[in-house]
Image 1 (cartoon, helix red, strand yellow):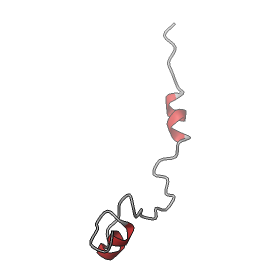
Image 2 (cartoon, rainbow, N blue to C red):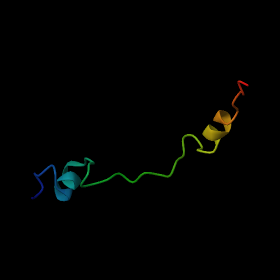
Image 3 (cartoon, rainbow, N blue to C red):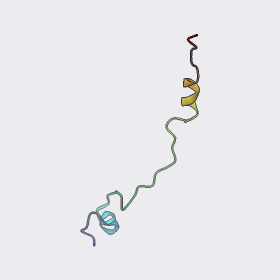
Length: 48
């Protein structure tokens, strides 16, 4: 478990890669607002 180990955090730091041991810092960016999806599906035609 040293610099040559690709699965450890130290190895990922040495190699400069990301994975389960070393997560990327993600910004909280919302691609599509969750409130917009139910609003469009709430318009249902009555078949009576």
